[in-house]
Image 1 (tube, helix red, strand yellow):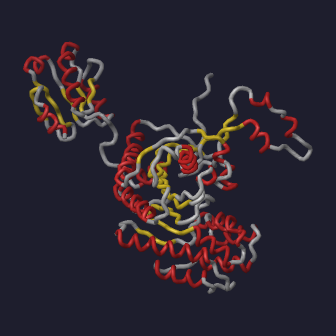
Image 2 (image 1 turned 45 degrees about the vertical axis):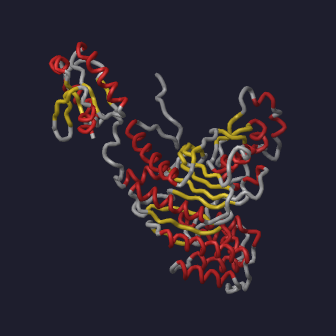
Image 3 (image 1 turned 60 degrees about the vertical axis):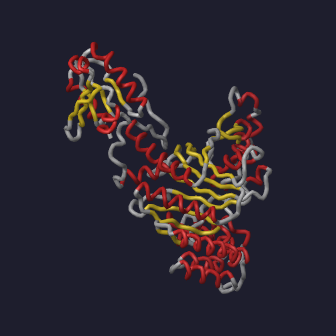
Length: 466
């Protein structure tokens, strides 16, 4: 008995209906990217592991899909040398037989691209990518092992006008999609300030990794994780009230400025944290002037776990549908330096197309009429009429109308059923009488309106088809 076909967990097939809906998302995002001057590039699905490793923190590195070298990689490796009584050196063995990996995100490959092609591009460089990424994560609702990201980055400028425009892009995209969102903003320098005024500047990564889980595991669990990472109870006591801070943007900034300037229980001052607050104040001033329509707030618990962020960080949540973040990003100053091009600051955002799809589906926000790309179906009455219909269909296609000729002559009911299943809005039924008269009959299947046109009346046909 043949094995039942299947696909790996965390991956999905997409049928014609789903692809029409997904392309609606991609086309909407691309159109907004282009209005802000971003141009499209693509990078390979696989990268050298040396490009990927060490860019996402220890937890991110564990989620990289490694690709075993082609040929017979184990025949070239002394496997026994990686075995001992103390245990197997898995990491060493994997490194010996895997030189490549599937990309984890689009930002690190973008940084590699910028360095590799630095003499061919003009700075500031604005690019967008719409491609799949892969993570060896545990599949669950809204979390997949293969999923698409839609990224926009500008690199080669430190101006926070770039941050403003990325927030405006988020505002425009979700406005066009009809999704109400909350745009949360923080600054990694402020998070560094947490560690400094808590008296543990060497624990920045541990703190950010812990508080990045606040929404998922709650404050008590976050405190326990920080303690487990070596923070003292006194340090945690300094950080806790910051995570609970409420009020307006101005109130949050004022309170934080006091804390960073020696007003916390520790009495310590953080110049880095104060710099981060200056950047937040500048950015929110721009946002107020821009009149962003979606809700925007400072969220001092927002951390975003990727280690390469150095300034503003963003996260976007749907307000009317329960799911994780559907867009995020931030400022990075050192990413290209890893590849040999220092002092190249950039900032970017990434739209999670798969989660956005789930939100649109859950809220029933997809427009009607996405089910079929075909606008007009020519019924096939008998073979003798086909030589008359074929050039008419060609003329309409050249005019931009998607149309089909039903391939097999047969009963009209079957052809009407076909049009209904594919949500084709118009059908054209023509026999020898229409061919002799040089006319084309077209019926609107939703209204029942039926018209006859001269086959050369392209303007009238196009007007009727809308």
